[in-house]
Every structure is written in C-alpha cells, then in structure tokens.
Amino acid sequence: MNGKTDEILELIRHPGSSDPYVTVTAVRDLLKDCREADPELLSGLRGIKSELRGRNVPGNTSTHVIEGDYLDAIPGIIADDCMYKLVTDLECRFDPKAQEDVDLRSVTQLYMELVDIVALDLREACRESRRYPSEKNISDAVRCLGLISSLFLAGARQLSLHSTDSPASFRMKAGKCLTRCKEHVSLVTVGTGIRSEVLVNALADLCDTFDSLTKSAELMELQGQRNANYREYHKNIHDWLVRNIMKLNAEMEDLDQTDVTQRRYLSQLVTLSQEALDRYNGDH
Image 1 (tube, rainbow, N blue to C red):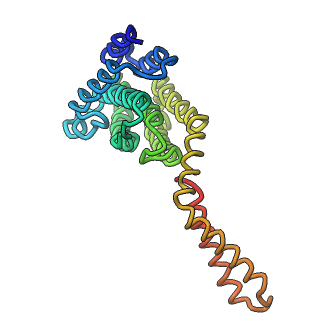
Image 2: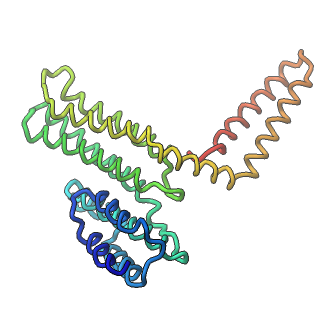
C-alpha cells in the first residue's frame, strides 16, 4: 500500500485527464483491494481536503457569479468539487470516526441554481442568434447547452442520502430547465429559416444527458433508499394517516345511504388525508 500512496495523492492533486471522473475511477481502482489506509495516505487526503477548503471548495459558485466569470469557471468548479467528494469519501472509508461533511449536501442545489443562470445566458445567445446568426452567437448558445449538460451530470453524481436535493427533485428541476432550453433554441430554429446543425446537435446531446439521468439505476436505487429513510423518520405521522384513512372509510361504509352531506364531508376528509399520506410516502 505504501508504494501507491504517492501515486494516489499526486493523481488527486494533478489529474492526468480533463475529465475528473476518469481520475476518480483511476484512484478507486488503485484502492479497490485496500481495506485500511496507512497513516501517510490518510494524512495526505486530509491535507488535500484542507487545500481545497482554502479555495472555498466545495460549492464555490457564488463568487464566480458575482464576478461574472462563471461560464469559464464551471469546469474547474465541477473538477474541484469532484476531488473534494473523492477525498471526503476516502477519508470516511478509511477512518470510521470521520464525520459526514455537511457542505457536500448542498452542492447539487447550487449546481441547479447555476443551471438557471446559464439558461438565461442561453436565452440571450439564442435571441442574438435569431437577430444575427453569426458563428459567435451560435457558438455561445452551444457552449451554454454544453455547460448545462455538464452541470446535470455533476449534480447527479453529488446526490447522496443526505443531499438537500433528492433524485426526484433533481430530475424535476432538470426537466423544467430542459423545457426552457428547448424553447430558447426554438427561437433560432423555428420559423426563421436558420439551419444550425451544431445547435440542434447540442440540444440533442442535452436531451440524451437528461434521458440517461431519468433511466439511471443508481439514482433510482438512491431514491428508494431515501424514500425508505423518509418513511422511517416520519413513521408516526405516516402510520397515523393510514389509521385515519381506514377509520374514515369505515365511517363512510356505516353511513345511511341517504346521508349525502355527511358522505361528501367524509369523502373530502379521505381525499385530504390521502394527499397528505402521499407526501409522507417518499422523499420528494
């Protein structure tokens, strides 16, 4: 194990690929047979974590939004957060006493907020492309679509049992954004006579990214785990609602058939209780 320590730490500090998830896979492959870490590796991981924290990682989006350089910064933000999650996961894996990092919970939420901002840039680029379909304007729109796709994928990978967003809420937000993106692109491609294959392909890639997330077995499994945890946490309320609905249904069965007013009242109570129960059936 000692022989791999320097290689692992160097790989995390200086990834050999522009895709941070390639680095994550490489590090995990190096550690796949390791059951416990030597002190040097654990110390190195904590050192990297401290360095990243010194640069306001994870979720360092607000500063770039304020300074207006977020489009250029998004790939670096994603890479830094990915490495931070990796070292945090490894620290928890090798040190049972390590505490969960609560700052990782909100990363997906911050990404989706950033997605909304980039979608505004997309709208502006598409409006400009409709007025004047120059290579620059089209390129700006394509770039925005690519960054939104990257944020979708990165946000999905940051989801966890304790993240602020659940897979269900994440997909809902992503779906709404995708609808807006389609509307913005239609400003260029519908009723204008403009033929931009690169823009159409970029939108198709974004749609493929969204489809892959909706069909992701990992996200489905995570949602199932969160639902189970949610029901367990709210077990008392959930069970009370179930009993209440059963009681109301029993009262309706015992009612005189001519008592329409009371039947309508009980029916409304059952409906309201069922709607409340649906909210407590899973993590939305």
